[in-house]
Picture 1 (cartoon, rainbow, N blue to C red):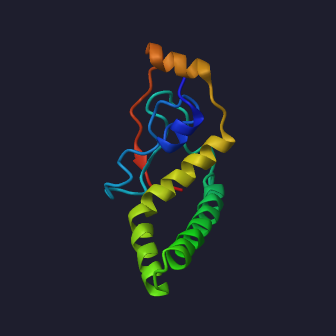
Picture 2 (tube, rainbow, N blue to C red; picture 1 turned 45 degrees about the vertical axis):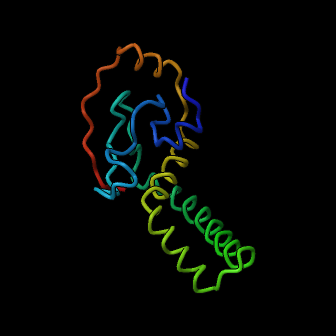
Length: 140
């Protein structure tokens, strides 16, 4: 049984914890906002209702705000970088991790509001489920 943390950080389906949420790598920057319509392993819908990921926006905003404050304070006060250098480093890090953070926030939110099913995971592992190949979409 995969753990909830490995599923969240691995950007996996919250129901079976096996299928990918996104069709491409977070650091490939190829189609960064594309997400599967449903789980490629168990068929769980990734868009249960219109505007479902609105809550992920709040997770993203709160997490990134605390990260930005902590990062700049660490560089400026602890490592004694200039304020301009601290913000330049923040922009570089934020630019590199923007897509990952967007996807991670969606994964966290989806795991918070969805329930894990051990039976579904066993069925996926046993090959008992037949699921059509999901189409990537950029709808929100």
